Length: 109
Image (tube, rainbow, N blue to C red; front, side, top):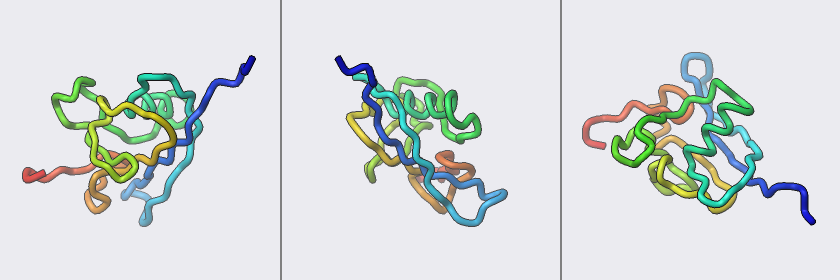
């Protein structure tokens, strides 16, 4: 019997323009369960590894569109996107990063 739970590797874009000039990626191992959303992954990282991770979480139902990010180069809503394996999470626009995955969206977005 395998007692080690399955984990996924999550690469997260990190940048705090107030103190850093260049972005980098941090890598985390996160327990995988069926039905896990990208928001669930980010919450796990925030609660277990890094409470300073900047990411947006509000409605959790795909209504507000505040949690929009790129996962494996595809634009998705973090709250409704289901994870199936290793992922890379990035902001939708690197040039408008406020902190990590939080961006300043223009009205035409």
